[in-house]
Length: 249
Image (cartoon, rainbow, N blue to C red):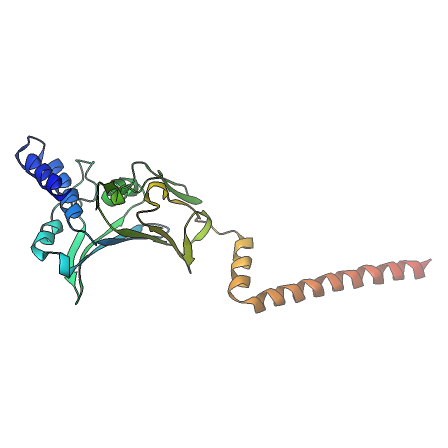
């Protein structure tokens, strides 16, 4: 498998394809050779922007740092399909005792997010629809950044983590940690790991009451007691008026 990939790299280097396309193809093929790597894809969705953070880790015992350094500039355009935009990710190559970490960061506006490099590399179809009231993110089924190629993998595993302080009304996440929705991708499920997330941007008064009661149950008890008192007072007034009317006759 590795010999086949190396031969393919050689063909790409001498081919007539454009330089940008050549760099994109080489990036994917070099990552195939670096086994044992994993990725964490983080999104933070606010009301007016989306913060995208990508971290790919590589074990030091199987990785040559010099192979990673070109990734700081190769394929770091945020919107590669849009020739009118030259935005680039803020990139870094860090390390600890065991791993190297390639990190990419960018803050998107809502109107361009569906063109982001990493999301479109990993899913064939991406839909990001938003209005003043709602945000909906959905993708096709296959997570392509974990495709099997004979005995080689692009990545061993990946974690997709989407965080928002707004109300999530529908999702298909594997787990939820506070206000973070998590999808775990591995070799056994990558071919059926779509993202579906619907966020409500505008809270209704009822939502506020429910949110308060969920965060502090004592508030719910207060609302119940106040409701009972109001009903009791209204009933007392009605009964007293009826009694007064009866006495008048």
